[in-house]
Length: 156
Image 1 (tube, rainbow, N blue to C red):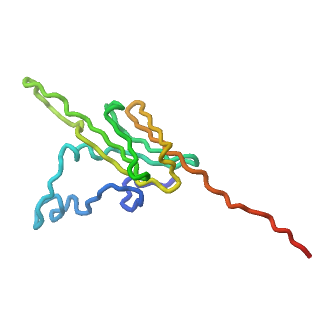
Image 2 (image 1 turned 180 degrees about the horizontal axis):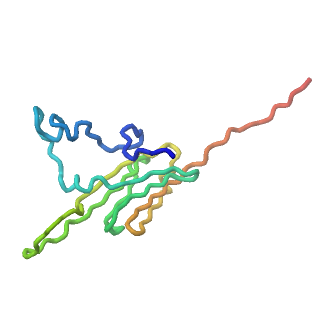
């Protein structure tokens, strides 16, 4: 059984931004000689919406974990005919003045993921559904064109 890396920096279809210096004292996260690049902490907290992409003989299937979100809080769009964009937002829980929080681990904020679809994708026929906190986006594929083979009669 082989292990498949879910975070592949060399995936030609992924449009995710990758910071090779994240976590280093001289990288974009601050410290050292370089200034810290500001980021939207709300977006960063929920930006890593986990999405699986598999290809079947009939379609490309994307599954995104979006627990606690309603379908009205998630958007699935196609940009420029070949870029699948999945986005959404989880609102912060309303804080009452008398509430005393002991631990906050659930993330909130916006997320946005983009995937460049391959040439065989039928972007105009995309379907999406949501069940039990899992968004499933199905992108049908064009049938592979079979070569037109004509027999040639051999004489002689």
